[in-house]
Length: 210
Image (cartoon, rainbow, N blue to C red; front, side, top):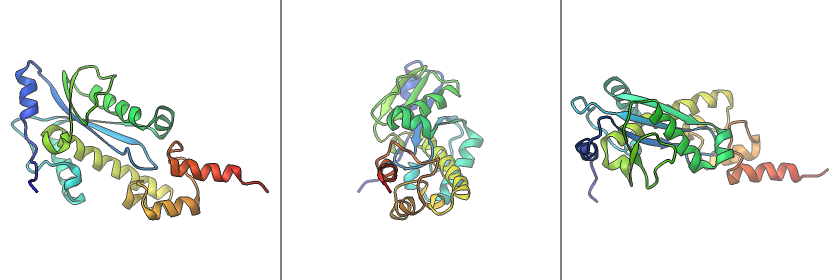
């Protein structure tokens, strides 16, 4: 299997087409049962790109931490979130797009390179959707790393407030241990009530009669 190495070609094309400020955008946290969805926009300096940028999922946690620090030092970075309440009100796709829109709004940008196949409708600039962009585009890879590190840190902090769910290791994803804790400990304010495993537990609790 050939491993794809992200490059700067998407940014170069956008700049050649007349853009002055090109940002890569990615989000993390669509799948978890708990916690916010986090997005990041990164505008790389073409002359100061950290070595070894990859899709965050292809990196170890330690390597992500190192690269996150380098990206923050060398590039323009904007981080934004959509809350659990917004996820439950809007749906996870729209909430993740809202987080992306907020992240882009935090930077000067006239073209956004978006990971995925959909462009958030509220973006204030032109955009290109890139499928598997975090593996193909350096700016999106950088955004994926910062978003992942940021959200993981949030979940570690929330794990201190709500021990027992394993958020410090599962980041709120529906692991076997997390699902068992949900059954045994109940639902926290940080759980997404619109997600089926959480909704089912609340429904079970509400339907019990004595």
